[in-house]
Image (cartoon, rainbow, N blue to C red; front, side, top):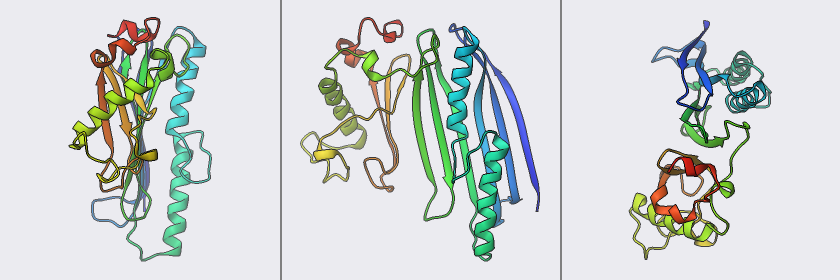
Length: 254
């Protein structure tokens, strides 16, 4: 039985936003986590630590958001540090192994937060989690967040596009979705294996701003069974140029 953790960081510089950050890593194991052991629980974290912004309020706001994502509770225990998150994971694992000592179960939890866009207009974050805490299969999730480097607050789709954008954006999104999933325009979505309210395609709000467009991500189980997997849709700015609010932060990107 052993317990260890590794912490590290690497430098990441901003392009021109004035926001700078380090990439921090944390790893901690409980038990024997070699490739064949059935007695193991592991936690891996990788996330940005913002070191500079226009002011300390914005820097703290960005870091607090990362903290909420990376340290969100796995079970009922609230965690304020990576070590506390590891302790909560390992405590439950020890409970399970005590109740079912012959079970081959391993616990794995990996979380990553990446800065995928760092511009004057927008900081785009992608949060990824992979977990196996028992059950039939592992689970994974991606959550996208777009923040203002001037204020640190989240930017909504309604702020970026003109009023009444929904119908055309969903139309473009459905066309891209059908292309991605090889569904013919005339085919029924429900019969194709997808779950949408009233059997009508609708984009979610899990979107990421890039230099060239918007990426929407449907997680596992969100619109289809686990066997189908997640779905990502990319809509270029060129495809929705008439929907972009000329006073929004997107004007500096497209």
